[in-house]
Length: 80
Image 1 (cartoon, rainbow, N blue to C red):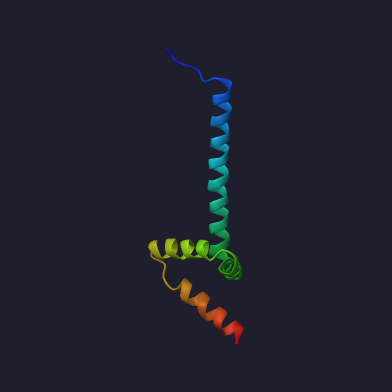
Image 2: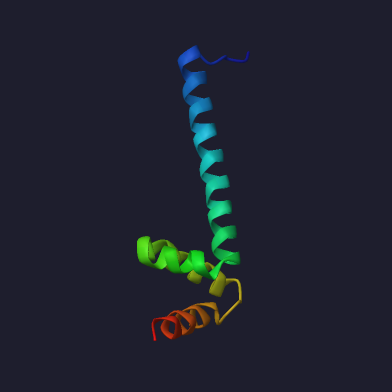
């Protein structure tokens, strides 16, 4: 005896599902952009430093070290 969802429940479920998918794809594209563009990471360091910190921690957790240091070195040299 299967119970069906009422129309409001279906709308809420679809809304939550769409929101989750948008969040997942948004996070993927943001990570991809930060992973391929040092200039974008510099922009992120000025506007959203906490997101850049999450990126660095996830990269270091996966075993890739030195990206943070390369970025800081380039940004320091570009100021001088």
